[in-house]
Image (cartoon, rainbow, N blue to C red):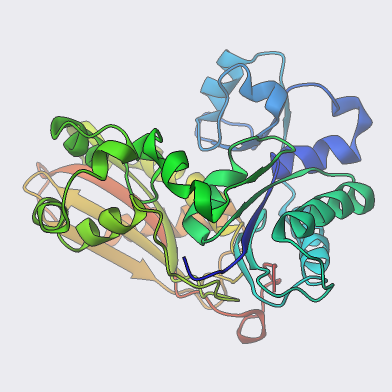
Length: 355
């Protein structure tokens, strides 16, 4: 460990909590932030709704089946961004080393803090108290020697929790942790590790660097380091977003003519993710993978950035006209993305904060 003190702040059910704060009738009730419609997806769910299994990025119609008593509220990103700026203002009281991940979460390096507070834990506690008192919202926080551990810690006692991983406790904390809690370990990687007899970080630690590199290439070294609690990535203020996207791989390949409802649903997911970013996307990308694994991409950069999910969807669907394959060609994957992110001063569209 290099002596750094990292805090990860994560607002609790952010969009839904803002809606509950601003509408007392919604407090204590299941709230789902989503557009209505068969193709819509959930942007956020209150903890009351999550108890019924409702989750972000879930199809809204499925969420309604799980929790028919939920109140559905259309997202208001202008309001969420304003609240996000207020949160960012509180964070800036303690450090300039702030790396926003989205509207509702950020890393802070408080190895040295502006207020001269003696410990990182006290800094995190103070930030959480000020968010509650000034904004009427709750945030969870993780405190640790690096970003990897701080992010895991912030989720440990959600909602409205604080968890600290001291340097001396890192090895013990990680030993029983499931490997799927490691960033980058998705379903496929977790299954490969499971086949190798690895289900916990402690079990992962028994495998050498060369073995992991053989199995996972360059990511093998990252796995080796994280299993030992090593993460030397610094907190980088204003890390530029390159792209956001959503894609689906199908159990059965589909024809091009059958992709429209899929593209509409993926556009919703992508728009929701992009709305959390700090910069504005200029380019719409459509990605297709054929049944024989050829990847086709089509993109368009309109005169002005897409300003609504409807506009994004229209452009993504129009890109289908530029896909020239035989009528019997089938596809195993479809993706919709936004790229070419720019700062506000480079665009005419409204700013997406934590800047």
